[in-house]
Image (tube, rainbow over all chains, first blue to last red; front, side):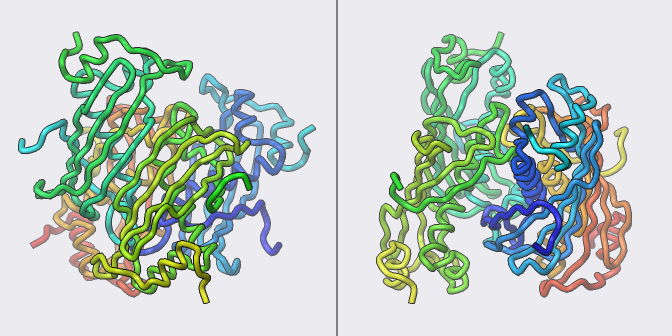
Length: 139
Length: 139
Length: 139
Length: 139
């Protein structure tokens, strides 16, 4: 694989394009959510399992740069990487490629904090950090 | 007002149109949700207050017929009417008009059942029926 | 395969669920669009290719009945069937199953008309009818 | 008005919230689009009129910081300001306040470039710059 990070594929729906025939900009943000969820599942740690343990990961900052458009019906690949993770925060980066996989279409990031089920920030168990970063596998 | 029912207005967003420059069909369904919520608030009974009393109104059936398209940036009006209500179910109808208010663009309906916070269907208090149908006002 | 029709799979995104933790009702309508697009591609006739030949298939009616909820992160399968097709109209039905594939969660339909690039209804070439119905394969 | 910038109001729809009962993060991006469109209309220059003159304003970068959540049914106000505008680019900032108007919930920006109907970047007429910046009124 020529690209780093976890690969997630999605095909651009008609619902996702606008009058210019290209994917509407806020839809990339939904793809990033699907991409990071897929990455966590791949590491044996579905986001659903996190929530069931009372660990939530709301987005506290997001950024995206649109370099080239993505068209209707294109199969796009989102590569997700853990840029940085601590017991308090998670910083992920995303790169979007089109069907030929050769042109960077967009790149972005999301920053998340760990909160508990009362909505308070807290320090997660160091093992959660290891699982998400891919340094350890779920037992 | 030439039309029956509760009037709710919304302007068509760029996010809501597709390549044909017209509102994407699933977006009408979101407008209907905003329209019925607005109607309930108008009758002194916000949906939020219903949920706080443990009364939920999930959609069990929906239908929509698209007669003429709605364009980007148009100010559309959705007229919501209570077609029928019992202690078990609520049946609402919607008609969508464009800016000039003279052409019916779409018409649809949603059917809801009353469920409690354990997800079980139940018979609501007769006063809830009266409030929603507009026969009584909230004390 | 125990079910008739073209199978399309999608995993329920966090973006697609509501406060009750289940897929929001208008999202099914987006899945149906992705499902029928996938069916057309499978039959050698991508919707994109239709549009390039000046054939558009707007939705003129849609219906959905919600039988059981679909939850966050579930892998759902939508089975799409051609209920009826003429040179003027296309009627599709959809059935949604959950991960275990044993419980019908929802069923719906969409009716489409054929319009040309000036937005006028017209009779399509009989071969288009054959391709979409699966009676003939693209040469 | 205690806040700078053009004020746009929207009520948080059920379709827009997630399992945590708060507005899903990509929905802010849709509100910003509605907010800037409303600002342009207010300055006598609807985005639709721009497009009809062959001037498009795609987003080339977006950013958002989420400070406090926005809840279901809240009436939020988005304040839009022109941070910088040249004949090539437009930089807008947004601040989101809740119903009591006293707490900053989120702040973000979008950067747009001017492109023509062939998708090429170009320098717009200086008067367009003046209209959008609010320095001149449409004749």
